[in-house]
Structure formats: structure tokens, C-alpha cells
Length: 432
Image (cartoon, rainbow, N blue to C red):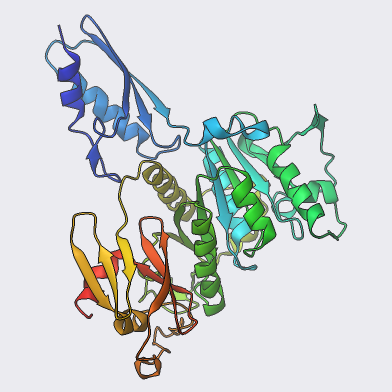
């Protein structure tokens, strides 16, 4: 008779390309049952929409069937529910909640939010989209929904269902065309209602279209519900990138993991030459090098993106972006990497690595290496910060760990938007 050890050994040859470990070590295999020659088990992936789901199932069936004595193989694909057990009210059946933020208006955050939700709904997943911008709600316009009467059941708001079963809710449905004239406690009250008094039912993903900025509304959302991650939408323009750093710092301060950055309106393709023209400068300096986060997509300027989403049509850019996002959600939920410890001294910044290595970087060199939008011209990529203008007694006052990918340092010259990706530590330690 086939043993469980033989089956697990066979399955251990399957490596998750994102987590770099085999699926047995990662704990993906659940409820393994052997009945005579037949083998059945669950494979619990890190997120429902994992684009590798089909590959994992096919490989698992193949390697187990190759074990001598195995007859039929039955694999049930499931997924982890992250923070779902902690959720209450209308969110209690939501598996994963992702915030999509920009921290600056006008960069296309709501359009990207709608694109993400529509793409996953079209793939057959149960998806919701919550528009939390009280003063400039976008969902009614994006989905061409006007004069909609919101229904209630047992004091819970019922979301509107659009194409492919996507559920949407917006303060704009309650407000209509009237301006939102309110402040303070009233604002917080409406946000709490949107967060906790909508009956979403069972969802694989709920995407929250955050309002721009890093103020009361954003903090209320971040601290009122268990968010599984956040995505920052930006353009490469200097004003936008200044706010990217602020947004990253805000989410990290309230312990919400950052999933990545989306560069919107990155380029346009000329009708006559088919060349990509980058509006805010070329790709010489990747956003991942600047912030330590993966760039999930470079989205072009395209007239098709201005169409209402009530007749959503997918394309390769959208497919690739959502695949990258979903894989990052899965990777984040299973992340076991430990960030270096950061120690600030009068002359150096010391990075103590998980493997015991210690890397030391001179304060002056690290301050001079800042790549934020205040220290580098975003269009040309040329440094605007001059080394000779940095004080000789420069030192860090406070270091804030940003997930397992970077640290932010507040310097004694008043500069507080420096973000230093850990993958660059070796370069800085060598003086590069």
C-alpha cells in the first residue's frame, strides 16, 4: 500500500516560483487521505486567484500518479483566508481586503481599482469594490450607475451587482449629485457605515478605492478593519512620487503590508511608429530601486481606458498587472523573510542581517544616496541633492522598518522622505 511519506516526497519536487520553496514545506498539502491505491488531498494556496493554480494541480496529479501503486488521484484546490476569521459585520465572509491608494489625486487610482475588480470578476471570482472617497466618489461614473436606489435589509446596505457578479458600493449612491459638505465626526461616521454596514456576502476579494491623501479618512479605514495589503498608484511625475513615500510610510505605520506600486499613465504608443513614448522620462530608474517595492505594472495612456466599466473588456496589460498583484498577495501572505535590524549611530547606519552579517554605511554616503523626488529630478534622473550641501554631522534620528523590503530614515537635517531598499545595502556598504 502507498504511504503518506511516499506521496509527500513526490509532491516535494514541486517548487513555488514566488516563495522559492516546495509546496510540502510551505504547508500547502492538507487532508491527505489514502484509500487503497487511490490518493486524495487538498492543496491550500495562498490566495484564491493564484495564476499558478492550474499548473500546481496538473503537476501534483502527475507526480503522485507516478508513485508506484497509485491509482486515482483527486486534488481539491483551496486557499487561505488570511484575516477573515477576525472580521465581523458585513465583512465576515470576505477572504481578502486590499486597499488601492494614491495619496495624490488625479493619477488614475479609481480607474485602476475598477480595472482590478473587473478583471478578477471576469475570471469567475467573487469580488467587491468599495468606493471610500466621500468628497469625490468615482464608482457611479465609472460604472455608469446614476440615480440608483440603495436597498437595505436588517439595517445593512445591499451592494449593487454589475457585470460578472461584481458587487460595488459607493457613498455616491447615497449622496447623488449633491456635494458632500461635512467634516470631523460626520465624516468618520459615514466611513464606518461604509466599512461595516454593507452586506457583501461571500467574497474572494474586496478592493477598497481609497480617497487621496494620508489624513483622518485613510487612518480610520486602516485602523478600523483588517487590511491584507495595499497598492500605491502613481505617475512618475515628481509631485506624485513625493506622495508615494508618504503613502508607504502611512500604511507601514499602521502595520499594513505594501504589495507594490503601479505606474499609471507611464507612456503612450504613437499611432504612426508604434514606439512607446514615456511622458515623465524613461525607465532608467525603476520605482522598485527607489522604494524597494515591486512595480506591478506600467499602464499606458490609452483612450480605451476612459470607457465606462459596465462593458469591461480585458487586455494583456490588465491581465499581466492583475496576475502580478495576485501573486504578490500570495507571496505576502506566506512571507517568512526577516528584515535586517537597523541601528543609527553618530557616524554610521548599521544593518544587522538575518544570517549574522553586519553591513555598515557612512551617514554622509547614505544621505547622499537618497533617491526620493526631493533629491532627484524625476524627468532627467539627475541628482539635485549636492553632496557638498550635506552637513558633515549628518545622522539619522529615527529609522522605520517598511515591511521586509526597506527602511525609512528621518535625518537631522529635517529630511524625512528617504526610503532605502534593503536590496541596495551591499552597494552602499561598498561605497557605491
